[in-house]
Image (tube, rainbow, N blue to C red; front, side, top):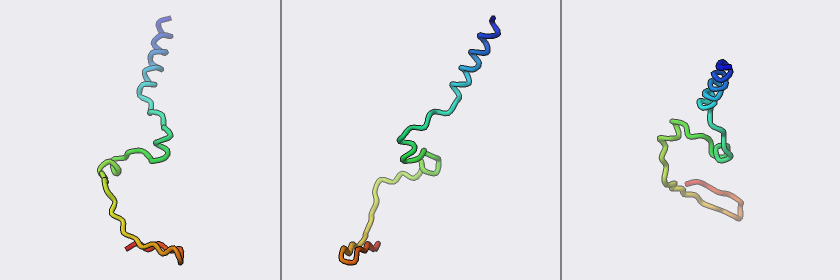
Length: 60
């Protein structure tokens, strides 16, 4: 009888070490890896030229 309780406790203990579930937000933006964590970008400085007559965008 006691052996069954130990097996159940052991199985629930492993559940605590399992990976967390992937959320919808994670699938959109990806997970935070060490490579992405150090890249703390706050501002983009984009310069481009738009020519709607030729349907063209040119980066400067």
